[in-house]
Amino acid sequence: ARGADDASKPEYRMVFAKVVCGVAPSDLSAEEREVLRRGATKFEQRTQTTGTTTAGGYTVPTELLKEIEISMKAHGPMYDADVIREVKTSSGNPLKLPTVDDTSKIAGAHTEGTALTDDGSEDVTFGQKSLDAFAFDTEFIKWSWELEADSIFSMEALLGDLLGERLARIANRQLTIGTGSSAPNGIVTASSLGVTSAAVSAITSDELIDLEHSVDPAYRKAASVGFMFNDSTLKAIRKLKDGDGNYLWTKGDFQAGVPATINGRRYHVNQDMDSLAAAKKVVLFGDLKKFWVRKVGSPVIGVLRERFWPDLGVAGLIRFDGELANTAAIRHLITAAS
Image (cartoon, rainbow, N blue to C red; front, side, top):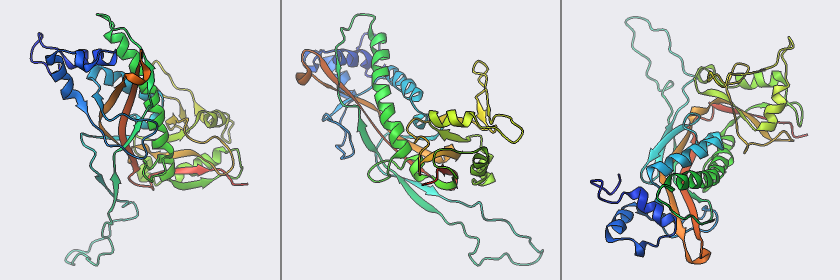
């Protein structure tokens, strides 16, 4: 356990639980305070941090972190490492992300005995983007929990759900439609135009096919390729049929782990994407693993006593950023403006 060399010493998990459940650090034993100190952290105040922040907090124990991550994955695809490309760092220094789109380059025929052409016309052009560490918090949750001998597991499950759901809403929204200005560059914001629909509030099966083929075949071969849209758009797509009267949507087998598909492609429901209306980016398609999500450290929990006495105020904070490495890899369908 963190901060313990043997079973006789307090473990970080239990000391953390005491503090979250109302025990003031000054009331802990000297040994417990030392264990807690190792998990204490300070974080930079950022203008993009939502709500009220504290000056510091405590890194969540591994067991609670698992509960938070499970909850976050259930509330949106953009923080899910199975959907996007995840990179974890311990510090928040800018992380440079090299970019390149070499799909238009081809090899040429070579005549034996002749020199290779070296005029620079086939040089690879590299770009560079930056992944930063933007901080977002949940605001304070009024919290009261009487810690019993066996209740730490229940406390972690409940707190994991509460903070996980709130952090998920923040993270998924920012990683979906973040502006890229002092905030993550959301996947919708960063994507390129693929297709403009003919209608204001409807899409056709042919337009979905056109969207697929707006992405280069090199990206369409990836195992991580798929669609993304919100649930109301999914409802509309499920009603679409091909020229033979077959539905584009194919039912999966949940028990066998086989996902439902559209045109044979996987899809992900993202409630932070727009619904069908004029001039809205309602469908994404492409290699979703080309979208990078940087996760900085572990979530931090701050505890405030005086303001919420006799209860506690508990808030969660995470730092992350998102960027699309190659804008050609993910394209969007936008509805007609009028």
